[in-house]
Image 1 (cartoon, rainbow, N blue to C red):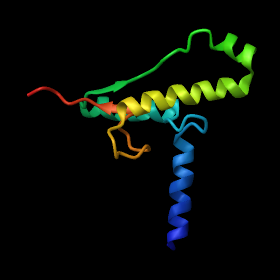
Image 2: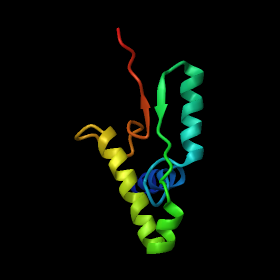
Image 3: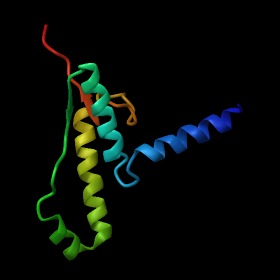
Image 4: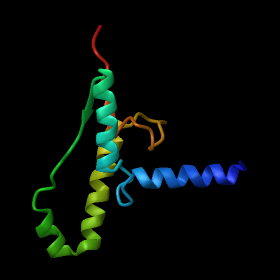
Amino acid sequence: MPPTHCATRISTYRASITDDLTALYSRKHAFEIIDELCLSGTPCSLIMLDIDDFKLYNELYGSREGDHLIQRCAKIILSALIPAGNPPGNRFGRISHLKTRQ
């Protein structure tokens, strides 16, 4: 298969498992990964958050600004979780594998 087909398939696959707005894993894909990790006995963590008064923010400033707020929240979370030099798209930062203390 020519490299362009591979790149297209990879791009299509990434688009199918991530949210367009935030570039975070889709809920469905995140729970599939969590199921895999739980079945294998691998400790993991998941961050879910609720943006207080988001509906009001959206009504006051419009959906475009609401989208920007969601993007900023996602970037803050990812910047706190992804080590420097680790590209987004890696599982780390979306679903973190926990290391147990020895």
